[in-house]
Amino acid sequence: MKKLPIGIQSFEKLRSGDFLYVDKTENIYNMVTNGKIYFLSRPRRFGKSLLISTMEELFKGNKKLFEGLFIYDRWNWEEQYPVVRIDWTQIKHGTPEEMERSMVPFLKRMATGYGIQLFSEYASDCFGELIQTLYANTGKQVVVLIDEYDVPILDSIGKNIEEINKIREFLKDFYRMLKATDYCLKFTFLTGVSKFSRVSIFSVLNSPNDITLDERYATVCGYTQEELEYYFSNRILDTANYQNLTREELLKFIKDWYDGYSWDGKSAVYNPYSTLYFFDKHTFDNYWFSSGTPSFLVELIKKRNDLSPVLSPVTMTSTAYNSWDPDSIGAVPLLFQTGYLTVKKMELDYERVPLYTLASPNKEVNISMQEHLMVAYTSSPIDQVNNLRKAMQQQIMQNDAKGLENSFKKLLAYVPYQLDGKSEAYYHSIFLIAMSLLGFDVQGEIATNHGRIDAVWEQSGQVVIAELKYGAGKKAETLLSEALTQIHDRRYYERYIDRELKLLGIAFTGVEVACRIEADAKAFSAG
Image (cartoon, rainbow, N blue to C red; front, side):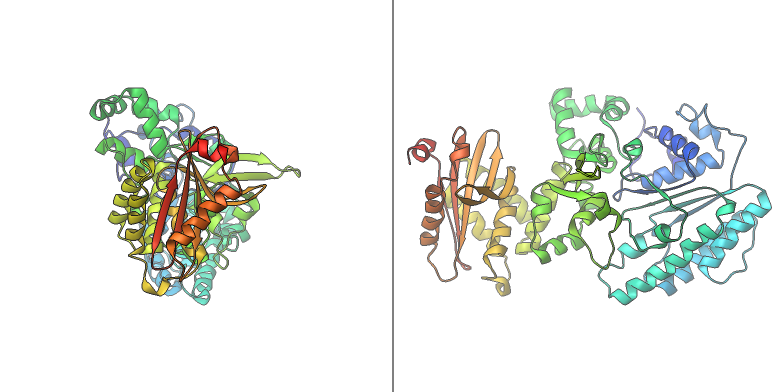
């Protein structure tokens, strides 16, 4: 059984060290033979660096590493090319001055490896000089591979706009060299998390082919279902035995937890980072999410108090994706590009323009994002949120209104006093997050012909219809009566009367919370 390549992003180390490799060289072959310059956006820890490393070894002609792979008998191994590979995570990039001081010696060390001396003083000039000199000295066009091109901008978000613009201008000058040296270039491939509309690769390059949403390359990163079952077949059986599950039962659990990422709405892939850690630990857990908690995203959602992108499907056009800019951050495009939302469906609108339906990819992301949102809204410790989630699941199933009430009180006990009585919308958000953590399919603000339901949850044929009331200075019992009376008077339950029903009223007074559960479908229909 081959070793799991956890933490290995080097194709050479992976292949020479007898680690498992899921063959993606067919995608690479199709790219190289059909185009010259590409851009690919994928979330962090999704295999972009390994993809870049594979391309590097391919163009350098390291034939032995590719034995047994798709591309082995299709590549001209007699042709070898000089490769300039830049990984921005290895370059200091806090300020333009820092980038200059770090990039210049980085490029000069690379030149030394090729027996070249660079004389330029600035990073952009060194970049251009390196490409031109390699071409002149070898007679071979140069391959440029840039990994995480957008890291300097992503890491500058939160700074003032003047600082961001300085970093952008530095990158614009740097990437402009790719256009100036186009005649020297054989192939150019850039990866990143986000596509910024006003950064040079999209304003000064010769139309890079953005394959992020291209169905031909939808599975270039991540594992398909077929790949999972083929490459991990022995580990699936071992883990099924460890979990005391059948193979089919285990596969369903793995799919629920780590599958579901899609960039075309048709082909889905497993998160490679979480999948590898799962087979190593034999335990379902939050691996990818916890490797880099999106604190900026969570705070952005909290600031705008808009939970809709993480609680229910949203739509986005490719224009919204292509025009994203750090000056005016949109939560939905950012959640998509960073992997917390994914394409569930792609359809053409009446003008034949692609329209993408986005939602959370899987259980790992869904639960983890909601837990961190709850922490942000209430300042509760993460372990407290985890424990309360499990308790609340049991309480609502057992119609334990008092227990549920106590769980809400524990959550609200952590809300900073400055936020006490902030607004009904604020408490409504806490309410939606808490209840979605119970594992129900949450739908907020459901319109009926009698009014608008605060929230509906559905799970395994069971439906919970909830109404929240907020009133500073009012008695909680009065608010509870108002909430349940509204559900009854407006007959919010009519469309769900054929299923097991629960009516849930929750009252927030700013200093007090109360819950009441009704679970008698016959009484609803009689009323």
